[in-house]
Image 1 (cartoon, rainbow, N blue to C red):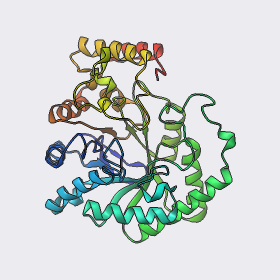
Image 2: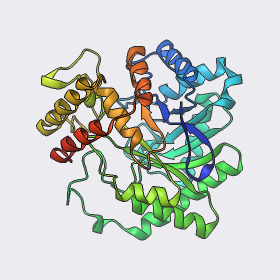
Image 3: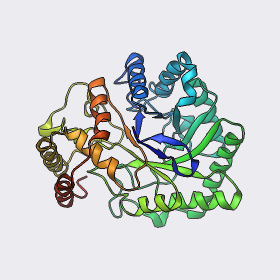
Image 4: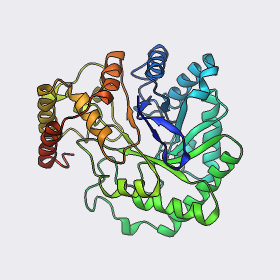
Length: 350
């Protein structure tokens, strides 16, 4: 297993991050225990979760994933020091989470305390804002004029960000969290937080996790360049585009128990004709070179300049082993050339 530095934190994290959002719906406690223990044996030290999980999000599943992780940690207390544990506060819009309120300094403190209790731990290594209070170009909102940036009040957003940082600062000083990060944000969001942190001597954001894959690489080059030069760790989530790049949804297939058989908060926005054509082409390159389709996608993500650690998720041990193995499979120059040819045909397939 290879390791990278988590932005300006100085923490070493494995280049594979174990995602957990299926634990509590598609996976049970026993499944999660097996995944955690196998990942640790592979020297993976980075686990990502969120108060919103499991998914699809609902009042019934809220907090279940953290509780599952907490149950495991409660039985394995001596291992806690060896794990870099990341969680997230949910943004506004979920009525069962603090009445759907936006993130504020006050809700940060509330969320941290609640997560600590569910996780059975005294501290969270990386505490992230799951999505910003303003509308951001994620979850298929990246098309021009889908919404208007000009209608967002930058001064109001900056004031909210300052309040959030002050709440994070209280948690850092209390020893409840070590470092802070972003998710589903933009260069403006990153840079505004950095500016406010410097101006007011508040915690610095050390990372951002955004959707990034062969089917959704809009963060390259501008946001990733920003991350590299500002020492922000870049953490791709959904590197298989919601499982699509594994090829399991080709030709209308819907494997029993798979994510696409469950209700999706943002709909099946990845399910496009162009997307399926791209997946078919990538799967052929994989087959021609002894890779699975999923391994090709993950190996590609890992070799992108600026990527710190890729968040993977699996619903069974066979998938988990396949995915982890991908990070020890180098892509040849010919494979990269073939991948680039397909990428240029389908640069934005959904």
